[in-house]
Amino acid sequence: MQKGNIALLVIILVAVVAGYWFTINYSNKRTETTPVASQTNPTPKPVESTSSADMANWKTYTNTKIGFQIQYPSNWEYSEVKAGDPLHLYLYPKHTGEMKSRDPNEALSPVELVIINNSSPLPCLAKDNKSCLELKVDGVSAKKYSLENYHEVVTFKNKKGDLFFELMTPKFDKETFATESYKQYYSFYNLPEKERKNIFDQILSTFKFLP
Image 1 (spheres, one colour):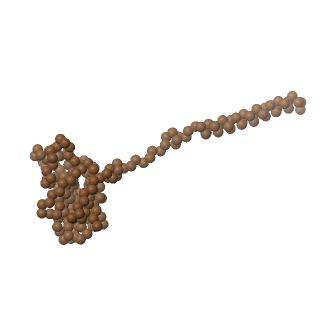
Image 2: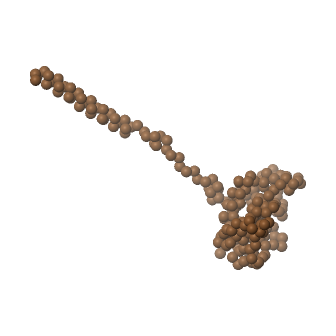
Image 3: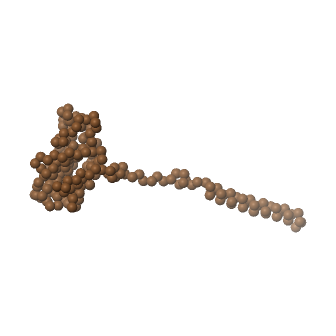
């Protein structure tokens, strides 16, 4: 082979090697500098439950005489009525400045807790005497059912067994608010079904007997 041909082959070989080297290095640089999809579009973090976050700021009602506590939404308030029974506790959304002050003896609210003296066994008060869900409230046996005038009722006894607790969420119809004094409360008390059930179950979950 002539010297000229050998020189040409060497030049071609050098060019091929140089091209291969350039291609590899350029590709690596693109890989290092090009953001991947997960960096430009990160996976969203789970959103904390609004209801759980709100419950952290709930208010607490404590009754040391009867021996229990219960929590309620931070934008709600309560009133106590003592008329023969140990306690009638009414929980309801806080009224705005435009509304007439609520009569503390008014037996009208979206959540009620009634406590009466009763040492008899815990009954099922459902209309058919069968549709009672068994559950626990702070470790004690409880029954949950509905009645004609109540969406949900949860009944249980205290640990001594001498007090009967009823936590209820009543049904509201427009006739209940026929009088002018009640009409202004209708939008506050007649909560949407999903919201009413959610708040009722959350309030129930906070009930605790005091040591």
